[in-house]
Length: 116
Image 1 (tube, rainbow, N blue to C red):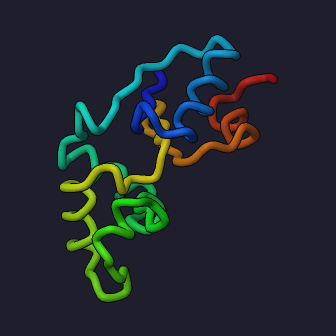
Image 2 (cartoon, rainbow, N blue to C red):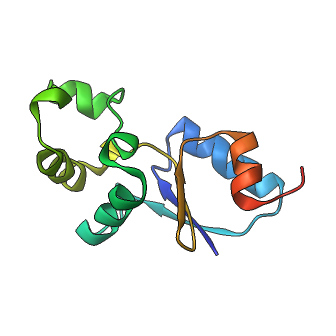
């Protein structure tokens, strides 16, 4: 079953969820503000995609911390991600071993192999 990770009130997550529901695609949803990912789950995302793909440097939390990614190691970035999961790009779609981030209807069609 498809698993969607994000934040309930994020507009991009809302668009993605609406897109899935309009197509009758069953999924489970995990709001990382209420139910954070384990360190192992964050590590799995990073291993499958890369820290740079998973890290949202355009978000409010990243900007509020006033960080420079070039000055931080991947380990330091990983520790920030596990501590501040709102910095994970969203939504994250997990289907079996495949993972993708963001909302792109055409990419969703290919990822989920749907006919829309």
